[in-house]
Length: 382
Image (cartoon, rainbow, N blue to C red; front, side, top):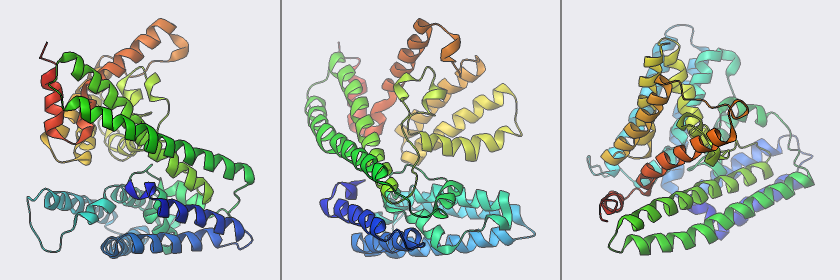
């Protein structure tokens, strides 16, 4: 997320943490001051995004409260709320792709909606399954959706966890502050030093006439680049979240030691994989319990993850590719490898195979169809 690399934004976030530490004796400091900070930050960043986010949040809070208290028609209301939110994302993506045109459209709306809609849907799930006991105050609902450290690039917060954190007083110790600062520095090193330098190398090599060794290098290089980029942002978000008194979930859990693709997607961008598994796979798998149904659901989930990243045939094929491999793992009962029950050679061998399969499709993350196709064509140029 670009604004977290801005010195003014970093100073504002650090200043907010210091204000919270200075006002720790005020019981409501975390909830109220973080709300004011979130709103002021968005207002200064973009007036359009600020107004859009406020309107979007208030409309969904009304739907969320309605669902919490609804005695009848809960399933219809639940489904309608989710469908409308998905439709909003789809519509904005189509406007962004110039499929539709409208004078009101601005790409900044999509910037603030991609991750927010996942949190909104999680809140609706909570309201649907918990009912009126799950109702949260407007103040905490706004903070949940607009929490600046995770606003546009995650990690994706779970509604119940954020609300539990909101009830706790601000108790960041000196050790917590030190750990948060170290995590932020690590993230900045990844983003500012490693990613910046590696991007220059990637663009230089990608601009050459590609042969098979160039393409293989670019795939591996881009895999490392995208890891440092994603994990670097997560480090910054987790660090600032800790300084503000909120626990942000880990997004990367040693993904390179994943012996299967199923386990890989629990470790790489873990909160995204968890979200789709919790809200789609687990819900439908209750009705379709066969191994074949699980395999089909794996394909559906990965296609949806691909399309969530972007509406293009390349992302669609990426989803089909990963989904098909995970479906085969399910059908062949190879989805889980218990490290304690297999030999080290078998475990690490499976890890290598998994990383090779991931590397084959990783350049899709570049978001540039021409670059991705050039790299794949280079594999055929011996």
